[in-house]
Length: 92
Image (tube, rainbow, N blue to C red; front, side, top):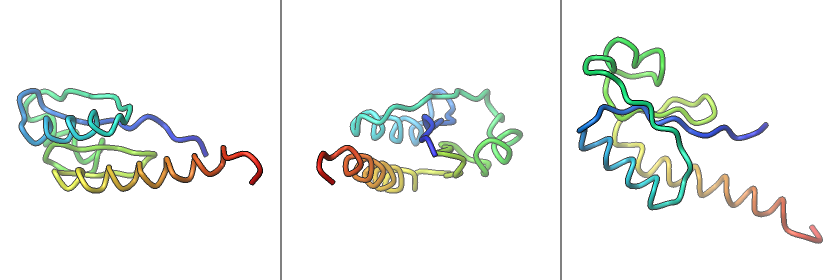
């Protein structure tokens, strides 16, 4: 199953969203940012990312919500890159 680019659902000017976005950039993780309108997270959040607060994220259909994304995103992508790296290794 191919890994799709994760989507970060954020509000412009939100400090928690900026923190998660900075972590994604620091880890060189490709992502797509989707800016929501104010109160959009309350109306659309449960459908898009499973919560009513931002930041919210979807990674291969998995829904993550809140600043808890920081350690989870780092661990998930570290694991994925390790597995991908092993598949590419010659002679194995």
